[in-house]
Length: 375
Image (cartoon, rainbow, N blue to C red; front, side, top):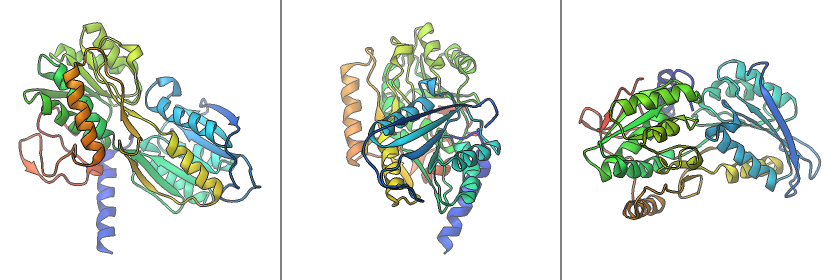
């Protein structure tokens, strides 16, 4: 997830790729620390006694009670605590930017041997912190930079996006689906594109209208954005946000809703269709076990539906049996590799066929999207 200038990062990523081819925290931050017993582990990567408790830290850009992005990662931390001998520190609502470097360094200085940063805007600050603490393992979510002791990880949410798009395309009667989006960065753009392709598989006449909020967790602003889309004629709302506000707004208007991150049925049970959701726990456990065993090495990991990191939430009651059958058939094809949600070549927003390109620096919309990919 990104709260930084995506254009700069996209250019940097492209430059790094070309070179290879040629050869956030304030004083009011909150923290919780818990320890739990579990599977015995060996010493931490840079020393410690046999069976010693491994200190692991998580840094989130939002509150873990958001029931969205940060909550999903926190559930992964709970899985880790239940299955390993670890002491977990969780920092919530840490702003992105240069101040977050101090947060990562403070955690390293406090003895945390494995540190996760779960938002895109932590990438460069974490890389700087990692250089100052070479014996600590750092893992950054959703980014592309890595170092000798820093890896990155994310998952193919676009797979679940496509499937939730199918549910949304089947649900719309006005042929306009509204999409409340956070920031115009590649992660969000490829999700919107996959979602739109899913919508148009089942409903070729439908379009997806995007409104940018420049927020990740701001329920009032996100609810207002959803209402603007409903006022424009949308009868289904989708989102790349961390709160349930878009869905609650849809529920109040008698519209439908496709969520993100977790099963949010409880917030808008009548509106609910489905959502791409995350299971971070097994990945967090594997990273902690490797650090404890002294075998950890930085990795660039991109999970998917086949390995279980990405899944689809249960369907709402309004999703028909026929639609569910179509979605489940597509899901099986995604998992077995016989279907790709982002085709190559691909037709862009202007109707031009183009090479798909590197999806990690995607900067365009596909045909069927209303709105600007630059925000």
